[in-house]
Image (cartoon, rainbow over all chains, first blue to last red; front, side):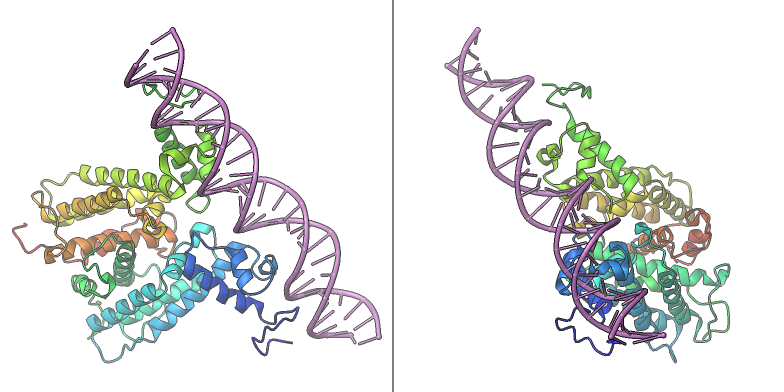
Length: 208
Length: 208
DNA sequence: CGCCCTATCTTGACAGTGAGCAGTTTACGG
DNA sequence: CCGTAAACTGCTCACTGTCAAGATAGGGCG
C-alpha cells in the first residue's frame, strides 16, 4: 500500500489521489464558485489527467457531493466544539448561531454548495447523516447536553427547527445582500442576536 | 415597426424576441433547473439562432438576471395581494409566510435562481429594488397598513428581518430536504406556523 | 423615389466542458 | 514471478457560452 503519505511526486499511482482531488476541487470551488467549477481544472491542479477523477467519484456530481459531505462534517465539528456547558439557553443558541454564520462566511462557495446537492439529485446517505448531525448539534444547544437523538415526529423539535431556519435564512439573505443592515460586514453585526431574542426557545422540560 | 404582435412566423426579425426569450428561458429553467440551464436551448425554443439573445441580454447572466427580476416582481405582487386588513399580527404573518412558501413551491427552480444572482455578480438595480419591495411587503404585514418605507437603520425592522429569515430559512431547508417533518409535502405542513408562533412579533407601536 | 443607417438576427468559428471508451501502466496477492 | 485488478492516460463526442462578421428589415432623409 502506498497510502502512507501524500508524497505525490510523479508516480503513476498518485497514492491518495482522492484526497488530493478533494483539496484541489475545494480550491477551484473557492475561487470560481459553484457556477464556474470545473472538474477538469481540479484534475489539472492535482497534476493528473482529466478523467482520473472518474474512478474515484464517478462524475462531477460525485466530486461535488464528496466535497459537500466533507464540508458538512467540518460544520458539525465546529458546532460540536462550541462550549455549551454552564450557560443558559440564550447564550448557547447565540454561540451556536455565531459559529454557523462564521462557517458560512469563511467558506462561502462551500456553504452554497452544501445546500444545493439535492438539486443535483445527490442523496448520498453519508451526506444526509451529516445534515442530521448538524441539526442534532443545534438541538443539543437548545435542550442541554443530554439530548437524545431527535425524532422527526417529536414536537419538541419545533424550537430547534425554528432556530435553524432563522439562522440559516439570515445567513443566506445576508450573504445574498438582501439584508444590508451593516454594509461593511452584515454577518458581524448584532442583528442576528437581536432576532434570536425574539424567539421563545425556552424548552418545556427541565432546562435552566 | 413590427412590434404589433407576437406572430413570429418565419420572419427574419422576430418582433418581440425579448419577451419570447424570457418565456422560453423560464420553460428551460423549470425543466432543467439552474444547473442544467442552457441559453442555446432557450434560443432554440424561441425559434431563433444561438446568439440572438446576446443583443437583448448581453450574456447568459443577463438573461437569467432578467428572469430573476421578473420573478421578484411576481413574488412581490403575490405578497402584496395578500389580504391584510382586519386581522391580527399573527394571522397576517402566517398568511404572508404561506404565500411566500407557496411561491417557492410553485416556482422552485425560479426561487433557487432568485437567491443566486449576486453569486453571479449580477447587481442590477431593478433587481435590488424588487428585493427591497419584497421586504416592504412583509414589513407591511407586521406593522399594519400604514408602514412607511423601511429604513435599514431602523431597529423596528428587526421583527421583519426575523420573520423573513425564519420563513426564508424554513423554505430553503424544506426544499432541500433538510427538514423532513412531513416527507410527503414538507411545505404544506403546519410546522412553519408553529415556528412563527415562537416569534414575538408584536411591534412596539400601536398594533392590536 | 432612392439611399443610407441602425437595430436586429444569422452564420460560422473557437475554446472549454462533462462524459464515455479503449488502452496503458502500476501495484499487489498468490 | 506472474496474473489480475486497480489506477490512470488519451481520445472522441456532443454540448456549451461567446465572439466577429455577414445578412436582413424598416425608418429617416436626401
